Length: 396
Image 1 (cartoon, one colour):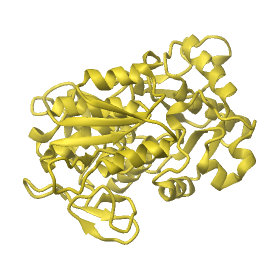
Image 2 (cartoon, one colour):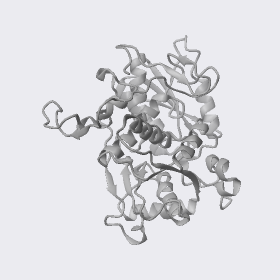
Image 3 (cartoon, helix red, strand yellow):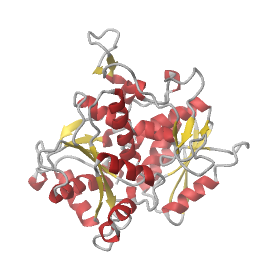
């Protein structure tokens, strides 16, 4: 069901069921989701690199539109004039082992190269839909809190939209990510303390919504529009595999933006009748800060070597906003979460680089987790697996 012209879709509380026009969270404190997520009728489309009206293919979609080729599945951007886009999406899905060097030649998976996005990470998926939602609502200023990649993406797409932005970051955020925020014209606000302190400072800056200094929270953890974007990873994986879902997908897992996006996307495809089953979803967390692993398997599993995985800085989230949703997705798909040590992350990063995949350290936890899952027998030799590689090594 599409929103009425000029009227952005309403939001619904995951806990109390209240429906609101727009808030960053429910009055009861719980996250929100779209009240009427679209489920298209008819058969799955065929992507073509041409004008669909001129293509001799039934139900064609123009692949040149990137992730917006899946507009019938998106709860934002009903009016194309509102879309804030840099041509993002439809990232390559490649054989992980083709030409691989040394002992890397045993991933037996496909890698989704998310690091080729305009800002070098998968967070552009959420940024394009979040800033589109902001434009639909007539927002003039956004704020976000981020360890780096999400902030760079929000800053860049805010610049594209002509919307002012401030990004709250940890005081020790990488210089390369701060440069990306500044060069997009956004204001980086460095906050001392924990990652939770950064979020607290950002929320305090929102204002009361009535004064000129008020801002709209473009949060990758809270804002449901961000998850509309990350859900497109599932649409692309299925379309690139001729609408066949893999047996398993393994992603890094911090706040769960890609993990939950994949879950929501595959579930929506199943409801539309475009795929038969939702794949098992596995999340890779940083040892020492692995709250999902701790909740599922205890403290020893969450911190197997007694040291924090400092290399995987992008997923060091002690209290995920959507913890309940993450655990539900794991249970619903028969998946799991595993904690990856710093040593394992660095070994996998070396293997990735040697095989031609120039990624940043955080995304190496996912192929490292796949290695662990195969050793445990959770992923069988014949299983069909997709692993998104989430961030570019140029950000390191």
